[in-house]
Length: 290
Image (cartoon, rainbow, N blue to C red):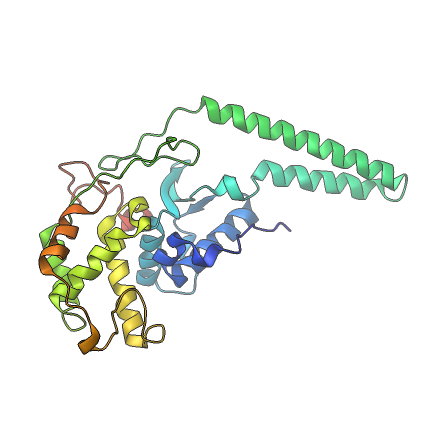
């Protein structure tokens, strides 16, 4: 039996917060699956619905949230569609490491009580030597690997360790007017048009949006979570700005300022000419139904 590694700050991580608690449960269940079956972070698409007790539509929504938060990455392994846990090898033990540890424990058990202290020291020494050798082999293979080419319509995101020494400001883009209009109409019973635009601006100001593969999906999740909090009474009536402040105490936002923020904030993740009707590289149904 092997154990997964989970940071005690995991629930408060911006990616986890953006994905939502139910998606976070699916994320942890996916790591357990990878560790149990030694897949090195790959989860086949047909396995995903069995990881959580939800129906198909709910599972697709949770997978969408994980992809939008960059916790999962759509992938294909041995002609099998599925998802890769982002940076799995950086935090979890690989298949080779787990097998080496099991073999070392097996040999230690066979030795029994004969020269136990000396034998265990030798076993640990051999196991450490084998682990170091495996780590060196993986490092050399990683150096030989060609750089990953992002799918059409997606700008590559620097991986851990590849970031430049000096941080660069993300490129800016605009959310389409049609998308903003749809959000205003969808939440017309919850907020005014100006308030919806202000919340969208707050979502685009958050640092996690710069890592989202689909900014529109990220903003939808942000609005949905705020609406759910508002319906439940929020955090003692205070959360993310003044969404539940009494009307007399609310500050009326300047529509021109909100429009300027919407026009100037965001990140380009799609190249010019991207058509979601024809490009299925980020289509969740493409992976779950294949």
